[in-house]
Image (cartoon, rainbow, N blue to C red; front, side, top):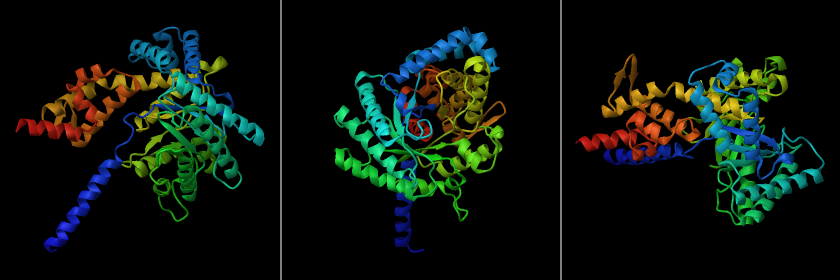
Length: 425
């Protein structure tokens, strides 16, 4: 290989490395859930009302830490979990809400859906003005199949126009549009083209409208020729895809699994989630788990809480830090599961990360755990997610890890270790 060729390859390598590094960037915070609700029910104050209902359910069915721990089948950090769940439900009960025009809404006459699209958009604009919206929000349209494509486009056009008129051309923070039942690259490609047209019509910056894809069929994971399908679906979105959500029940139904056996911990769902992770890791596209359909209502509140709690913990252990919630009472078990997960790992993760940073990111051992650079980033991610969801405060993360605020906010263990190494020279 001559020198000029080596220089050319080096330039391409540098560009590829920088591009790969940028794909890992994205929103600093990932919500722990998305709450879905029918568009006909959405109001500007839906999020705080859901929080109030969740607090009322907690007070009635688990009036103290011991009662909640008994209902969930775990007593680890019971008092801390209980108090942090109560505080979260009062402060920020919903992290992400999706105004649903698909399964949670159903098929209705055109005039009725037109009216609900306008009304929901006006309520969203009012929520933005009054400060009652969660940090992330959006809508779900119907699928872009030939049966429902025209309706999906019409609803999106009405909704976007009404929303932007009400906000003076401003989108709510974290706004995304969810596309269900994706099976073909042409579907996200079409939605991206529609987004570009809407941006031009309403004076939005190019790329302002973002989409999420729903993985609800085997064809969304493996195409007809046996290739991984999800990367092609993401590419077809033209850089607008920010997340992919797993739809466990449509997926398992497509595999012929009977209704009684359709649940988030089915082995088929484990494979699908892992396939999503393999397809999306390092791309900057987030992945989200699906919903627990056994709701904590009536006489089954404790049973519903425990099943949901265990589903969430199963997802967390698998690297799925976000999922769906369908009912206000599930906010209790969602946050209890998430906070318990992080609090249980706090001591060990803090000791390992502190030790690793103190040794300038050299491979090291704490007890029987051997840590290298990849583990260092994983440990840092643990604390970033714990802070992001409210399981711990930033001050507690700093005290546990020995990091400075500036180090924690880099979100990159490599940057922390490089700066520490340079400082020691």
